[in-house]
Length: 548
Picture 1 (tube, rainbow, N blue to C red):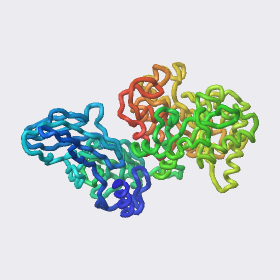
Picture 2 (picture 1 turned 30 degrees about the horizontal axis):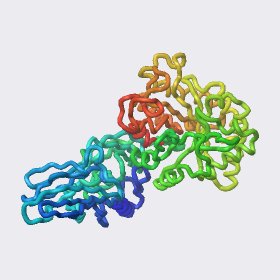
Picture 3 (picture 1 turned 90 degrees about the horizontal axis):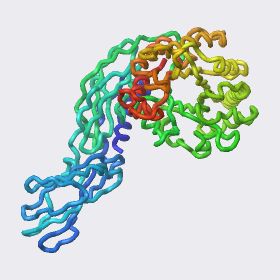
Picture 4 (picture 1 turned 90 degrees about the vertical axis):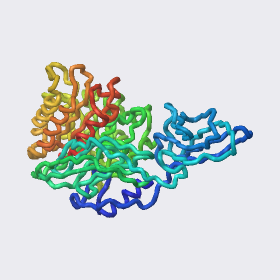
């Protein structure tokens, strides 16, 4: 596709420019717009007369979409001689002005899939010498697919979602095109600093405490470039210094949702590059890992999508456990078998990071907790022996007052058995009225209190760590929008408050439950919707550039 050609040219010109959210080196340096190397095949409309009975005839146009993307809307225009009149038509809706006919898709059938064709047929009367139609246009382009010179409309509503000391996350309203918008270029001045197939991008490699001006232009499959959006200014934060480790935005994705979430597409749309995937649990046989009790590790579930995500610089952190299903440590009765079960998932997906979401009965089961801690230590020792690293996160229920005694035991067990935990991630949600009285407008504050309390709990457990290192061990995962507790609603303003705190304290992880709900931006079941007013992926775009 031309989209890939454009990116290849731009990447070659800039040295290290990649799709929005990845490293740009040197900072903000890039080349001016590269001209398209070749034309993408355009849709065509081919006419043929299928029968003739003297006083009339039957004919058709076959519209073919050779592109690798759908043709979402189409309009066919042609002229007939004054002696020829269409008496019936099928496959579309016809509007006549003089001798010019404009046929569009019917309301239930406006899209032509990639590589597909549709047929518009009609009967016509004829009172003179037959002649083929003339002046054929398909979406304002010649019907033979020879040219497309109409550019997309300019993007609008360019907004700065958030900034760090080295990055700015942007969002905008999408463009329209007579054929198909292929992607967007983000400019700083006259130079391209990021590209994106969706309506969000994160520009990285910026300098601290520096103001930048950005605009966005759309390009279509033929390489036509839109006008520029309105400009927006972004000022990066001051350099944090202190030598703390980078933080990460890694929200949870319910990978068992239907339809299965497309991680690569979400990454390209939002600027996110890391996802925590829920959940791997025990399968139908004892001590056998499976994705939500449906796919064994050998089934290859989501492997293609994960490979595509990694190709654009992203990665996944599968989470073992969750609220539903049985965590493997409760099914495997000894440490060696449990270690092997976890290792089978690590091997199948070539993992360097994993999470354990320990809640429900699993968080109150000391025997399984200790087995898990010993298995984690064994997995990390095995990885180190092979010259690899295995980063481990614990996701645990938490209250504004901190981890429960059961949750704190999970961390103590890890310390006891030598399991190296990079992040203790608190599920800052569903607190209840006792712990979070009058939560309206205070959910961001309560989420921050969970982190502050967790800091106090972790400090004595890790006496060799500095204060900055303890903060860097902490993650916070709220439930965006309506929580299961009806009085608790986590709004965009709460996330902004939490994000500001995370940047100040350099928390190790910022996440939420979950990306599918964020993308749907709907009202309904809480498994699918946030039940608040929002735009699709608003929370995802907000935290995408987080780097601690």
